[in-house]
Length: 151
Image (tube, rainbow, N blue to C red):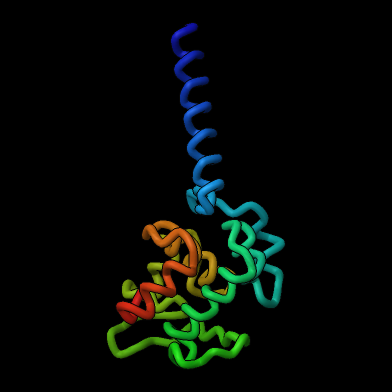
């Protein structure tokens, strides 16, 4: 019994240390597709800042995220306006779908904790995708977008 308690305490301690060092290095906290305040974000006209805050992304990272959206589904990388137009149903010739231009189509939004039918759902999935695919922040995803024309 004591051994189980000590093992659990060690796991908690190691997990806490990993989280703190990750945050100190500027990385977002692990999310496991759980949202802290989904109801509050989902009711906002523009949920991007709220979702960004859940991932601990600052204002510069929010602008980088908007730039990724511009490149993917809102007019191309040349568009540097601060206004983002969310087109939920845009589809390119390769079948990539929505704001994030997921190659798996509309259903891929569910894979990343979102849904394809709302701005909140698509942005949630896109943010989780950015974290899950090793980018960590929109700044790194944007670098990939500029280098590879994809993120």
